[in-house]
Amino acid sequence: MSNSIINLSRFMLEEEKKYPGASGDFTLILEQIAFASKIISREINKAGLVNIIGSTKSHNVHGETQQKLDLFCNEKMIQALDPTGKVCAMASEELDEPIGVSDKSLEGKYVVVFDPLDGSSNIDVNVSIGTIFGIYKRLDDDDCSKSLLQPGKNLVCSGYVIYGSSTMFVYTTGNGVNGFTLDPSVGEFLLSHPNIKIPQFGKIYSINESNYDRWATGIKEYVKFMRNHPDRQYTARWIGSLVADFHRNMLKGGVFLYPENNKNRKGKLRLMYEANPMAFLIEQAGGMATDGTSRILDIVPKEIHQKTPLIIGSKYEVELYLSYREKYG
Ligand code: AHM
Ligand code: MG
Image (cartoon, rainbow, N blue to C red; front, side):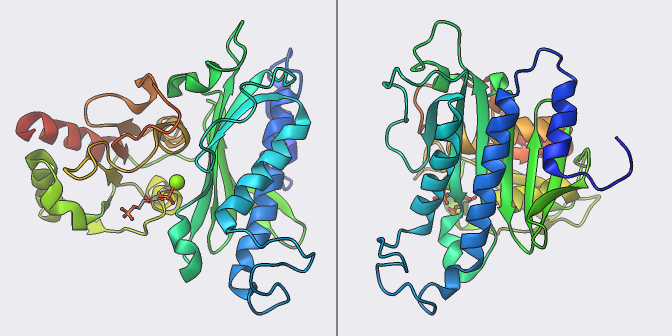
């Protein structure tokens, strides 16, 4: 590629050319996710204005019922993906049951999992939030009911969109991680963070310490050690939006932890559309992701909405966590 500005579409097309047999189906799916994320970004940016401009109470200017933003985002993702005809099933944090599994008319070769708006408790206070997605190939001879329950190591693509001080689209197809920043003046994602690599160690740990009394000894001892690390002055950062905490740590180095506690035995985060996509990204960036015993991407899922403890980030901090759990339980 030349030195000129590279937008997401061009980048994806260049990537597609590396696979001579590629049909373009996959690129179309990604394009559509990016398109949905632009609509979502636009909507989020005016979230605080909803009650000021036009759309009063529960109706918008078109007379439609005003939806909660996370439901709106869910709908935008489905509306973007469904017409492609390339997706035979979709699962979302906002849907009790997957879409498409029982609809035999859907013929696509791929399945998509997503959290349309993660960290949604932060919307009202103008704090960064995100969309997370993962794409799998449909399994051979599957009516689509099994294809959604593949382990993360089968992902062909995952990524997130962060709606922050700017909007960024970050994704991997197993060939490194690349980040694109939305230029609102042209409405395009432009390559701004090529080949992202997480530092092997960092200075940040991100954990909700209000759970301290509910943690196992190994987690308490780990956090105590991080507070008084002999070689580095660690600092704690907790936004409460996985995408934002993850994004910062991937760029700066460090670790994000949502471990199990005696109230939430599996932690809080969902394996299929939160932990797995992020685990694929972090490994591609040179980091690690574990639930405390297993590699996240090796976990064989039993159901779409299952939770998992998630410890994800730089190699040093994740390996240290594993050693503390082994030593102290
Ligand atoms: P959500 O999917 O309902 O938005 O919840 C997931 C979010 C993550 O983004 C974040 O890391 C976590 O919940 C914060 O949890 P807590 O409020 O326990 O700190
Ligand atoms: Mg979520």
